[in-house]
Length: 509
Image (cartoon, rainbow, N blue to C red; front, side, top):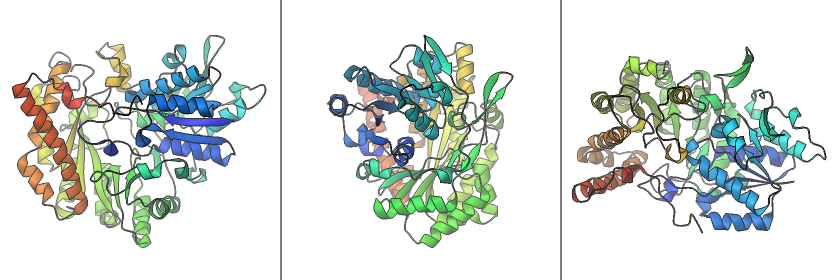
């Protein structure tokens, strides 16, 4: 049986070139590795980095005629393009089996199977579920009820099989199938995650329950409680030895010099962090790396002398979810793990003791009850904690989150087209205080208030190359914002020109 795993043509983020946008999808490489190890013929088609448009993809499907086509988008933003992949596959061959996975489809089973070209949905962690489903499809008389963790339509009824237990030992999974990916086409940006950025992960899941986050839900442990399956946060990690093995492969075989860890929460285990830092230093390879970090655990590791080891091992760019400047607001969005003062302490330690580390911070704005004053307080807080760059994201409820359930139940969602769920376009108001349009204008203003000429000059004069590169990248962003801003005084330019995704020239080719 021939299986194609496809990430279709897609729009990209504004401002910079395409190479800044397309890094390797870990999910497809991990799924493909398990199928390949089992002897199944599998091919990964990642259209964006190789500039394969819709007509070319259609021609490839017609020529190769796969038996199964799978897509695995976790981002609701790209769900319509993922569905188009499956629709195209069905148009080319109505008998092809189509499979969808990832957080979006796992959490919209009824809607996705009711009126779509999807035959099966793989729920949650997908490697072994997909493998068992493919093996069942190969049988003359398959019994899909045997496969845990799937949903499908049968006799006009949507059936969900019991959840599959999580993979406890991640080391037992094969190394992601980098050999099936267009590795030369990833990480080609001159500035962002440069040189030669490559994605990697050592852990899955989280230990918290943030209301806006779908990633912990996707990798949650599912338990049957009172007749209902409920998710519970769970975090697992590969061993340090296995992680170093993957780094060696990326460094020596694929010439990658910057690692982009896509873990939901990278630094949960203190002992793992220390062992990893010491092992990577011992490798004696010059490499930089990025990760999403928790402020509370960074403070813990600083007190134990581990943070310095992480920096010495190549940690040069971190992203911390500050989210809100008030503790009360943090609790209101389910961010219970730390306080505003802990975030501030962490960022100031990085600024004063480890200035080579680029400090990126995220904020969620436009929450219920948000006012102009409360939103702009986030900008003042970002300056107070000395963030190198703060990203202000409008609250965007996505399927599977508590924020989504609440917004749907209370009728707050004003935009239901997921192609707008890009975390820069507001999809609902803050209630009676701010409309969607006002939130959008304020997000634009917040970025303009932070990006200043002295801010740019300070960053460009940094003695650290990776940090200079990041400021060059953001300088290009600032130039685009300035051009848009100037245009607003000359022409009636809509602020959406600042946020909307860009259609690549090759998109339809």
